[in-house]
Length: 354
Image (cartoon, rainbow, N blue to C red; front, side, top):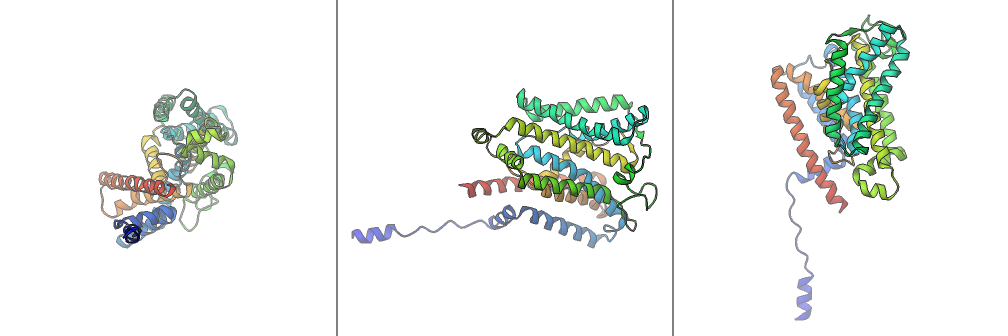
């Protein structure tokens, strides 16, 4: 009887059946970038099959420029979000830096090779202020960067008197950072009527550098450790305050650099460019790319693919017959879906850690 009882107790209870969507979530959690790339490819194919104009040179030029503009800023936001913080001031930095660069060059007669680094360093300085106030004064980054956004926007609009400023041509600066404004051969990266290569080339270079930084350097390891478990990171000697401030500085510098490239491409800078819309699109691209809002995980490649998806949605929905006001509805639904998926993926990661 005892043996029978023991044998009966050794009978394993059947594992609970998995819900139908759990294998899909597991796959996406394991191959996040590949999954986003597949979504991007399917989106392009769907739009192209419904309107063959989508892959034409003029429209793809716009898609490439939008991808670079959103993606470069999104990659900086990824670094900040990995640490568990957020930066809402990038749109204002994006608008302020090129206006400063052009105005110094025009008013003081300085070369763009002098004013451009100054503007980028200003973006880095703005990031330092955001990080310092957040870390040292214990002000939530949401409040800190939101205040910085309004401060920079007010300064830019007041200084510019709400008027755009035209950029004077200075070669080879315009040749390296601009594109196809003065003819098809005036850019290093233009081909057969398809422009947009200059911003995307710079974006890919930055993406490669940041990917190596995150995966191959001590700084990248400390960045992830800070966002994963702040107290544990401090226990093992990680200077978490410096890591967070450095992430904000890189984010601010990338926002300024993106603004300079955009101004060089368009030949002007306006105080109302960027703003809150660009900031939110960049954050959405980071979320699409798999960056956790709780910190500890994220990839710049995923953010870049997310930026491409957003650029395709913004430009492709119009071709599919959606009104300009309706495109925001679909974009909002896509962001909500990405957020829900993000929550599910975080739950999967927690289960695997246990």
